[in-house]
Image 1 (spheres, helix red, strand yellow):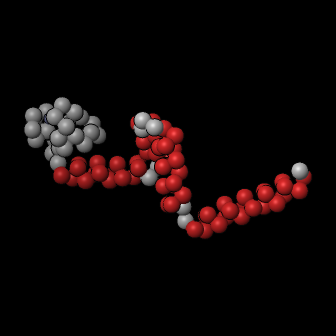
Image 2 (tube, rainbow, N blue to C red; image 1 turned 180 degrees about the vertical axis):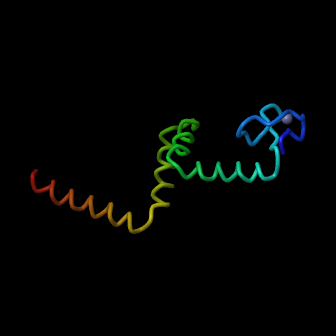
Image 3 (cartoon, rainbow, N blue to C red; image 1 turned 30 degrees about the vertical axis):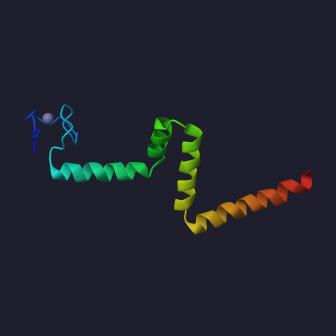
Length: 95
Ligand SMILES: [Zn+2]
C-alpha cells in the first residue's frame, strides 16, 4: 500500500507506520515491523536501548546480562569458565 489507510497520506520512505496516525500501511508492514523489533531485541543495540529506557538502570543491566547468559550456548559457557579457571590458576600463585 502506498497511502495510509486512515488519512490517505502518501507513504514516506521505509516507514512501516503512518507518522501522523500510527497505523500500519499494510499487514505485511506490520509483520515486517514485528520481525525488525524481534531482531533488534536480540542485538546489543536493542539491549542498550532498553537499558537507557529503564528507570532503574543497574537493575536493567543485571536483567540484560541474565538474559545474555541464558542465551549463551553451553559450549561457550564452558570455554568462558575454562578461561577464568586458567587465569585463576596462573594469577593466584603469584600472590
Ligand atoms: Zn495516516
